[in-house]
Image (cartoon, rainbow, N blue to C red; front, side, top):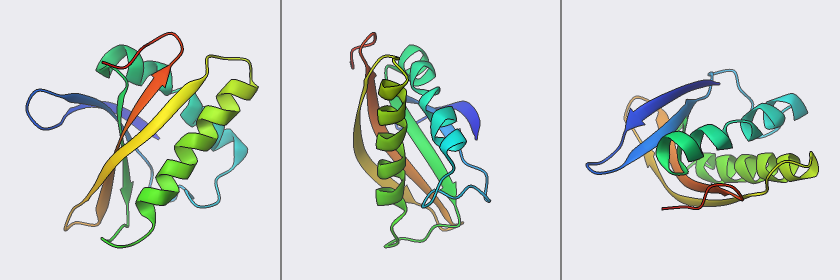
Length: 116
């Protein structure tokens, strides 16, 4: 996972997580889910809860958007189980690019940071 702060369409900004090509988003290790759960605070403080998860090796029509949504919800559940703030996740959309990337956009709202 490599966090970045990137620009989206004019007027909005996201906290971007670019997942490494070898990251298994369909059968993730518990440590990966826990690490993802730690990124919600960064998204809340730097980008008003806007999060963009970028996955390589994706093609339009595959299950990448659903896999990322499941992964984000699992990270939110893990975070709540660890007695941290709870997180509500709403996956907005996904954009596929010709170079094999899928950018999944989501709103992630922690108890301490309300969504804009």
